[in-house]
Length: 255
Image (cartoon, rainbow, N blue to C red):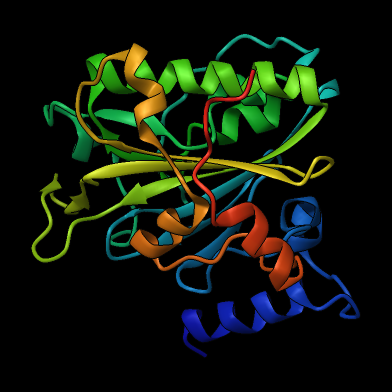
């Protein structure tokens, strides 16, 4: 059975409230409480996040985390154990050599700092399946890192957040790096859901050096992320509620 067909079946199982959970995906049940954003790619369940991986682009389609105030309490040391994801076959995954000399960072989608509550979660965040080629100074090591830090502060204040991160690609020919042709995104998105307040925040940032103080300029409605990616966030919520929280543009960053 083709893997994409298998994924579609698995996604239907995940979204069905009456379906039984079985196998390794049961360990990722917490991450799909509000639905699966899309049905393309290969699902990979990790201790601290769930992702869908694009075998052609060798990058994730989306990565979802559930962060809680309790998980912020532990502070494990960053491992920096970057490595290919051996659950994916050669030719369908990024290798360390693809990034070497590329002028792009190995940009985490589920940040290592979010995984400091568990050694396995921290280690798995360094799989290349959780990364995209990301501009370094001013982006991965600038405004994007600042955004990740803000998200952790919001978790501390709000208690629980669901965080969706991933790449956006331009129409037409893609820029790639390495022998495995790892696709370079033109932009990155982050969608954040506060399940208690039923509030959402979304940003789209060009994959280039940016000024950190310009972060509010990149706020967009969740629907704009859906339009540019073809994904469907919060699909487990009633349509009216999705419309309410996904349609307006956030007036400002959360405090």
